[in-house]
Image (cartoon, rainbow, N blue to C red; front, side, top):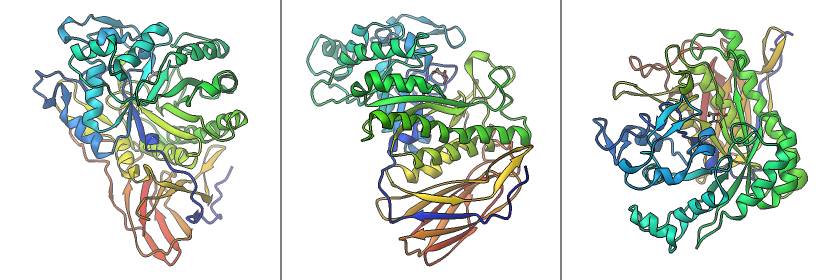
Length: 499
Ligand code: AHR
């Protein structure tokens, strides 16, 4: 297949037609008791030489605050369906240990538990999203966790007070199990739907607290799961999740996070674009049961999954993060923005040191680096809470062997002050792409921008070279009334602000 380079790259932004808000939670994150995400990455303990506030790393909190992290999902993942919350409250030294059977068989100290997580969310200024244990926990255990967190006066509230927290917390997002088709119990959709109905019944709203209950959803293209859940339990849920990971190779041999060529670059981006089809098809099923779009599609695990870095624990899922991962993040966030009528939250896996992390920390030291993916979230944070502006795109293709994908990905929004933000990705590894953009309903007076790119597709940040991939000012856009001309550099993510 030949590249269609005779096509003019043209974007029309319908700034006069914004109807849906991009929920801030679409820019959410996920932190599991897995490898060095919680222990070492977030929690170092009060006695650590690494600067911390009540045991939580200050540098990590500061970095996450800079991207306006809106919500954090915890404690898993697969870990959630083996987690017993009572093990993680009370005096730390008296907490029982357990085995993290899923992730490396390491000892779980339970030093990071409910109070520490809620403290973390308070320090971050973000909403908590707690995933309850349906796989191996009881209905009573899940119900009493909700009570412990949100009730003012009850035996559970007394226990919370005895453990040092007087007032109940406000909790909105509540997950009723995780991947219950797999690590969360290997259930059939029909069986899980019944269990969801039962567990969700006892997750109560206490006082002014209102839970937004999220049912464990499908793996990738399991449309049957979505069909059954919507049909059997749709009226009892607020959100239904979806998990999709981009694996550049195969699950058995995913490929290196840093040593790859153009073929693997293409494969990763092609698989990233598949998120659009997945959301479209799951949402179409949801539409049949919920035309008003009351139930949100919650993509609470997504990201690129590579092989672990050589020499690291295979159960810890520690990988590097290159410009390729940044492009994958930029494309995926554009897809979420463009589907914000149904996608109400999404959570990248995972925040620190695991999978497509925002932050990597030294194992035997205090160093921290920000990944290219982090920079995409920092650049895209302008879309949080903004109004989606529908766009039409006609563009060239980028081809590899006999496969073709669009050369550009884009989304646009208008913020509360009236500025329009346009995020663009050029998927082509070595060709600049000129784009003409028409803005309907905007009297363009100025355009400014930032770009994230690097000299090679595998560029990444290291503890020795932490600033190799970072955003820079972008001067490749010019404007005339109602239009922009943009020269997108190869392998780049660009965010423009138009006033
Ligand atoms: O994010 C890593 C794991 O991937 C999660 O624990 C699980 O839910 C998924 O399979």
